[in-house]
Length: 74
Image 1 (spheres, helix red, strand yellow):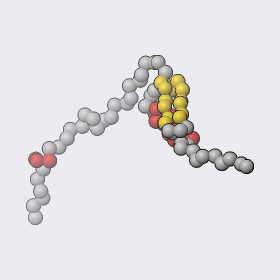
Image 2 (cartoon, helix red, strand yellow; image 1 turned 180 degrees about the vertical axis):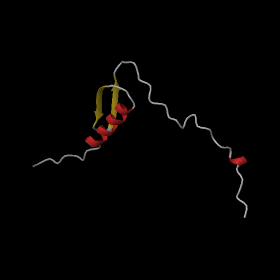
Image 3 (cartoon, one colour; image 1 turned 90 degrees about the horizontal axis):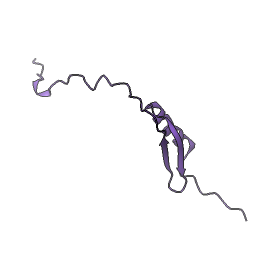
Image 4 (spheres, helix red, strand yellow; image 1 turned 135 degrees about the vertical axis):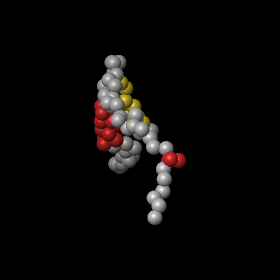
């Protein structure tokens, strides 16, 4: 009698996406833990100085008040 495997709850591409996201934020990964039963992916960071991400220029952009906006007249 052959046993069938249960379907996987996570894929390697899910782990790769998580690793890319963390590396893109400038953090260093010490290890990756995956729980196959719950499909929980845990990324453990190294104890190092975090680098500041590049500032978003839209964070300090002036915002126009919609109350001051005028409609075009015909």
